[in-house]
Length: 241
Length: 337
Image (cartoon, rainbow over the protein chains, first blue to last red):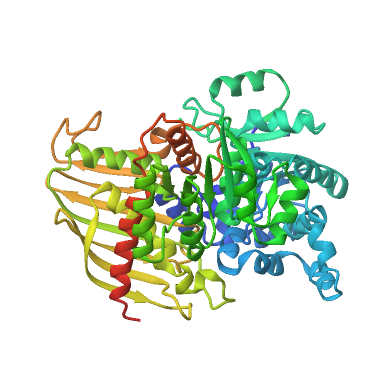
């Protein structure tokens, strides 16, 4: 893994400490080539890994990279799924069933018409796998050695105690994509403990690490202890000065 | 350890359930939902006791308190059921659809001394908490005017109907979005008592408004306006901002940034004369478990501490939420679309 990973928040209007800056950045990066140019600049500086959300706009960026495959031979993408606002807005607008209808891919809807809905709707792991496939489709043919679960889902599952679904994500990413599963979280020490209870050791975990303790749930001391224990392959995010 | 039940595991309910599940002082004794999609998932993948009927959950588990996160039209009968059994209640916003029924519930909680809270989570965001401290200190001088904005991308084209598109069920931009901003103004500045004008506009929704624009006045005579629009895709998610002008300064605050201008030195704390900018990472209290934003954990921590007798029951009470419902009712009376 590279020492420095290049992230995508600035491209898609995400900023954790200023909504205003986020909006300015979304104007600046409205054009796909402005994003690609910045990625190219990062590559020339030796940063060969792009960690990005499965945002709709990534589809175009992924296509541009695929069309120039020689140039991006050594380039890795670490997808982070899902792009949760898409689903959150859909649930508000369409309800839970409407969202499933809209986003779970074709074979699910096919099974709906075949009368297999009851079966599929009860097989939550299968449904999750179908949604993972739908989210990752845009990266087909590109190198994605690590695939992350976004913090809103990681932490939701963590609080609900849905350990088996975290394990199912882990298994599926390894088996289907031959990639390492990664986890983004705001609750790193707790997550590391829960993953260990499922037999997942030394996970790749991306979490806030800063002097202020901002979004380091459980506190700085517990974070330091967990980092020093060697039980986690940690990636630092929100390293605010 | 407090025994907590939850009724309604939809979008807000599942978020509350996750935070409650991780809370060291909470024992989640049961979850009720009428959707089999939801109850199937919870039964199979969590250790919670799951019910399709909340009445059964209450009678079997006798919780100390219950979180109610169902569509607004069901708030009143469920909350009434809980109050009849002397069970403390946390209910999602908006509080009630009918002010007369809402008043009765407020009276019940007072008579029976039942702890109560409503899910107006913005009050627990670090920037808005600091804004409240600044206004309360008087350092902005005599308040002159306020303007509030709220935008988001909920309904950006004509689509299938859900309860959020039905006014009789608590749908619409006014109930879903503007309620937050009105409640925040009531809290930070002063309760709004007069609505001098209101436009409710529909762009995509057939039976509810997609935007609200109002001229308002607080009980202490401060005028201001709000502009709320849930059909604005230039905002990635719900975004709320409030500007307050006073004789000694001006403040603009949103969920990530607080910008305040003081006309004089030593006006408040370590703030200086002229512009000061603070960000959420400097202002937010830390939480033990984080999901979606500190405010969601902080409001639950607050309610649990109220139940434990460690904090007074004075933030987001049924009574303050009813004030917000009354403003919403006045705005509806101006309906122009």
